[in-house]
Length: 107
Length: 134
Image (cartoon, rainbow over all chains, first blue to last red; front, side, top):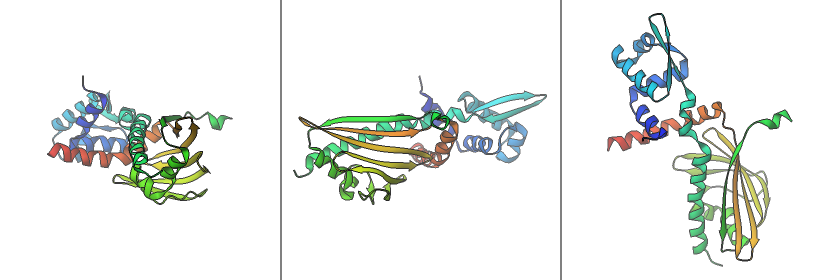
C-alpha cells in the first residue's frame, strides 16, 4: 500500500498538475474552463490532471449546472508537514553525531 | 487564560551519555563544536544573543532565551514557517549525564501547515525533479 507521502509526491511531481494545484491554492475555487484557459493544455488533459489531484485528496469538486468547480484542500498536505515526526527524526540523527563527537573530544 | 489555550505539541529526545555534563556543555555551546554535530553557526553563550544555524537547505533563526552553564540552554528556533523553542537539559548521573532535548511550540493549525508547505515546496520539488530525472 503506497503511503500518503508517496501519493502526494507522485501527484505533485508533474509540473502541469502542480501548477493547477498552486493556482487553486492562490486564487481559490475555479471552473475547469477557467483553469483550462491558462493551463496551456487541452480541457480533457486538465480534467485528467484534476481527477488525479482529486484522487490524492488535494482538490475537491463541486457541480453547479454544467460547470464543475474545483477548490484546493490544504489539509491534504499535512503528511508533508508533520513537523513533530520530521523534527524527532532530525534530532535523533543529530544526537548520534553529538555522541560521535563526544567520543572524539579530549577529557 | 484563553490566550494560553492554543494547542501546541512538542518533540522530546532523551539520551543517557557516558560523559560528564561539562563536556556535553562544551559541545552544545562552542561554535566550532556545534558545527560538527548540528550546523554552521554564530552562537554565543549570552542571554538574548541572536544567531543563525545554517544548513545546505536554508537557515534557522535563533535567540538565546535561557542559559545556566552545565545545566540548561534554551533558544528559539524559527525556520520554514515553524516557530518553536529548543531546550536542552543536562542532569548529572552516576554514569555520566542524562541529556534531554525538548522542542516545543508547534501549532498544528492550517495556517502553519500552509506556510510550511509554501516555503518547503520549492525545495522539496526541485529535489524530487532531480531524483526523478536520473
